[in-house]
Image (cartoon, rainbow, N blue to C red; front, side):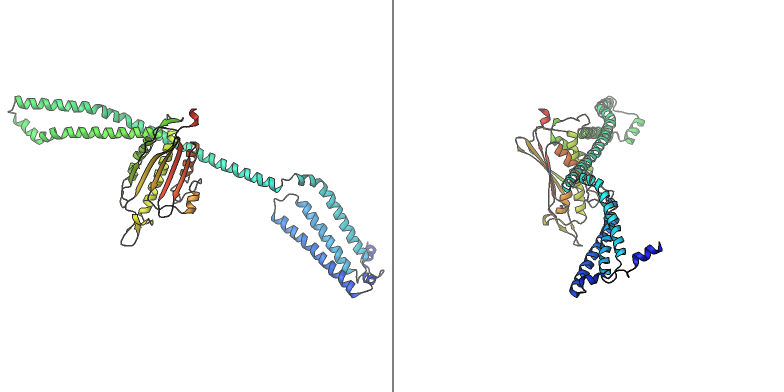
Length: 435
């Protein structure tokens, strides 16, 4: 073994390779520079391969890349030996290095053969791009499905809640409203009886006279009918609210029906009546109805009521924000002592009109802050919201867009900073589901 090692590393048996070039300076330097550059290139390539493999843990065929790196390193060493043997004739060592390079190259070639079909089976960039596009569509469909499920759950919960409240209120109100007329009749008859007694017996006992004065009988006789009338008006008002709640929930109308859209808008406004009233530093929000002559429209009434509710709620929130310092158009600005611009005349306009023989439009317009172009581009995206964390889910406008799209219509947003916001609902009058 020792003799073999001495034989490999000895250089006394041969003459240096430079003698073959007759030690011509130009020729020697040509080989030195060429072999040096080739070796440098060979050594740099494996470094790049090793770095690439280390960073890409998910890369397929990593072993073949490492074998390529080892093969290229030994190729570089053979060129280094070409320079070394110009002065040191260790040709046995150079030969063993070439033999080892040959073994690695042959093993790499054999390893590469079964990998070629697998590599050919890998998708092309065009196929990857098509798969990526399909994946994006699938993810969008999943997001839409998730939004629809949430919307369905919200509508179901809201409908059940509203229907339950309407039912619970309706029973006692029906009792009050049904008996108020009878109570009023009984009261009138009693007062007639008392009046008759007073006519027949003008001289009353002292005790009766004292009690009459104590209970202020004359005032009671005058005021009690007014109280009963007020109770009747209140009961009628509650009946109107219950009817509006039923119209809004529309639990019994899951299919497409022909309905009066104005009825749905009015029911929604009645439900939001408390939010439209001024509270503290917030003035009343004025609602201006500019209704056109609309025919009955084929639609899912409960879902469209949800759209009206979301749009009007957003308009109310926007106007509330404009009260506390949002800059507004000059026509709506009142400069306070601290130069803070506030809106002291918040308004929501609801405009309905017939566009053509089979199109109607509902416009919800506020004179609030408006939106920037960046916000406008995202306003219908699921989970996008400009409200503080915990104040909104970011699904309201996305749900509205899907509902209107389901009706074969369009929901558009027209807005500019300081110019208010307008949402336009455009839907067909007649649905193909009826034909």
